[in-house]
Image (cartoon, rainbow over all chains, first blue to last red; front, top):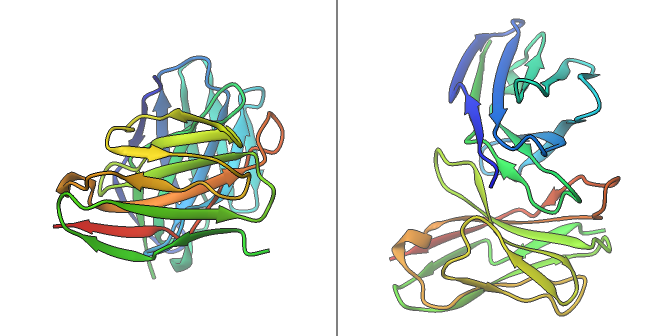
Length: 112
Length: 114
């Protein structure tokens, strides 16, 4: 099956700085890569996603990049704010996207 | 729409007891899944369903059963609870297919097995 690895496990940045979280995947057939944000005690919520036919996607302060050759994708958050503090998960899926494999999560702490 | 709902929110079981975690969605989604979330391990897929009457195993299916008799409901059964099943359980749903793939998660059920 698919194996998704995520780094770092914790990340602390100063408000206004950028944060980068990286994931690698093992199955070259994976072609859909969502990112989720989970606040303490809450459910995961989709913040951005990318398909394998696209190299980069941006939504305001959040962007995701994909390198299919190297089988890795990254989440970039610019101008971080305290409300960005949460756990972020990457995931990978393929085919009809009925199975998702998640990374182990990154706890982001944005210091005011 | 209520979205994806889960009951109970919290449950304590003794080893060997059985119980059913309920999941329902009112968005007419074809795909539904169950995940467990353990510290430092992200979300792991237990079972999933691509439509009423169709279920399949995920990464960690042992000790769990599911059924999908209707589009709306996807209960998860623990036949004989073990301490290793202490976790937070999330149900998720999506339209399915290659276009509308966004998964919507329920609020979770926190399970403690003593």
